[in-house]
Image (cartoon, rainbow, N blue to C red):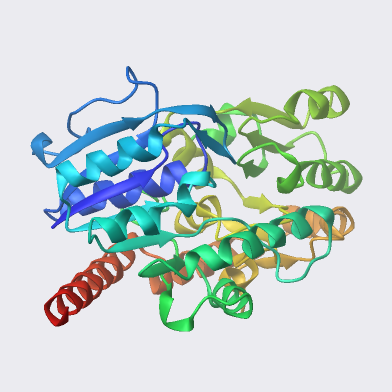
Length: 388
């Protein structure tokens, strides 16, 4: 099967990770993938993925843009025509759009209908099950804006029943929506030996890994950590960068027990940090289904996360500790010293986290569900064409 994948390769965000993991896994299963993404012409090229033994199975097509960020993409005026021309030339079996919050998202159903191509979307925007803040309110507006358009896709993949129910309430037909949770490669992300605590001179190590931006609520984590007074031999590692990094470092940069590690391009180094950590903390105000959280769980790390998006659902029933988005600092002030003083609790939570991922959130099962969906959509389009 030939899949035309429309998604992101830069700048780094969850959508980028999602596209990389899914397309590489599809290639491993013998699919042909053409990756269409917003890039200057010198960024896009034809060639194989690094881990693909048959490079001719994978190619890239750059689409011009005016602006691109982790959250929003503004395509150039000619990008729609170039996309339609590329799809007409490629004639894939199916188009899968990992939606990039771009005006082009709204034109895709029309473009694919004209070419008689099945169209599947993955809808990523973070959400909160209740509108409790300006951030969650803004994300809810994104769902309201997209709902009429999503109704015209053949299928829309979402990550949780909560997300599905929200879109149904906004008018997207139930038959259009399919729940396929994020999945993590449990072969790479697994418990194992790590020297990270010795490297960082930490007796106990807690980690945040992700963007340092308003919706991630990192300041509440830092405030809670400072209030918990964990001691100099307990460290909090902040892995990632973002627009709030400079301002937060001005206020918390002198704290010797807070380590600012920045963005780490080495996946193996990120895995080593998760393997060595006693706890992973995700204080987000809004989320979809955090891949960083699933990766930490797969590494057997005890996890603490807010109930934003589907993260609370992932950690329910003892797989982790779930926080309320509005009281992150005060809750951490209480919880962190307990985890510091009782390593048996973090060990138990880490074991349960790994078990939960193996039960529900493996990349292997994710890809199998995706392949089944592809088959259903292409068969449905073929039957419609025969009746016409």
